Length: 217
Image (cartoon, rainbow, N blue to C red; front, side, top):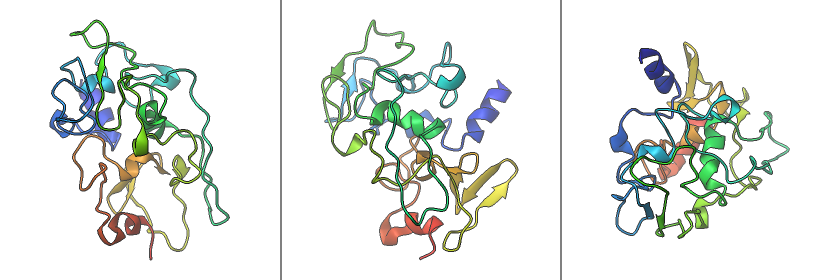
């Protein structure tokens, strides 16, 4: 059990506090906020994690992962720019995990293990989730990431960027975590808490504070 806790904490984007999910847009249980999408299960964590029979091998995107894509893992169109000094790759790990909902085609209840209190997942539409459990609107990033901040990219060492702080096997930039020295979705977003600002941001956008944590401007 101790080794599992170490793994969870080392993931950076993960918190052991379920209270951080409850009452946010990531709470898809029957207790979801009024007007938000919800399902017929009382369980909250099951939409991403399972304590038993979780994904294995390359499907284990984050610890005890319980989600799958609607079909095959999609191929993403990546951001490109002549000013890039590090090349984005197809989303991996924590970033790819986000796209098991935010690809805009996979239902939020497309799970490896269905929660024990229901026979199947049913949906009540609300917010950006329709009656089929699929995200729409701004929350559905799709597979074209050509106009989105690059992810799964090694944080570059270059003029104009803050130098990362390295502690043991982990690194961060101004408190924003890197994952195996890479920028991922979870570097800016903390899905396990109400965070500092919507949507689940680790730093405020006031005066572009989130941007200037990394970018010297």
